[in-house]
Structures are given as C-alpha cells and as structure tokens.
View 1 (cartoon, rainbow, N blue to C red):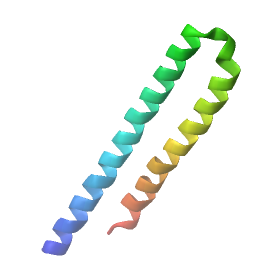
View 2 (cartoon, rainbow, N blue to C red):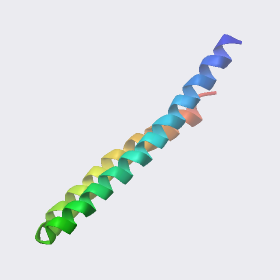
View 3 (cartoon, one colour):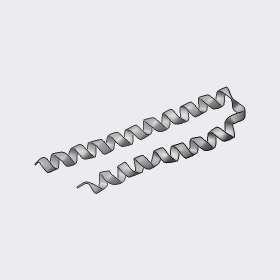
View 4 (tube, helix red, strand yellow):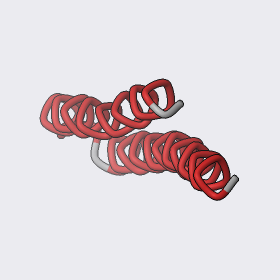
Length: 72
C-alpha cells in the first residue's frame, strides 16, 4: 500500500509541475508584452527571447507529462 501512496504523491507532484509551468509561461508572456508596450522598438529582440523562454518552460511541462504516464 505504501508504494501506491508514493506513486499517487509522485503523480500529484507532476501535476503541480505542469500547473507551475503554465503559471510561468503566463508570467513570462505578460512581462514581455508589458516591456513591448513600454518600448515598442525592442519588439523584435524581446519577442524572439520570449519564444525561446516559453519553449524552455514548455519542456518542463512535457517532461512532467511523460513522468506522469511512466508512473504506474
């Protein structure tokens, strides 16, 4: 029974990791849009860095999703 409890705890942590990445992506995109609103000339530089940051953040969610389905 303790192994099943540990698996459920691990699955819960992977779900929290996925929620955390969603919050992080929203924060990242919001701050980038705020910076573009303050300095429109820097849009090209900021947008490309935002896309890289979102891609790096998304990999955490993908790893958490894979871990969720690997746990049995």
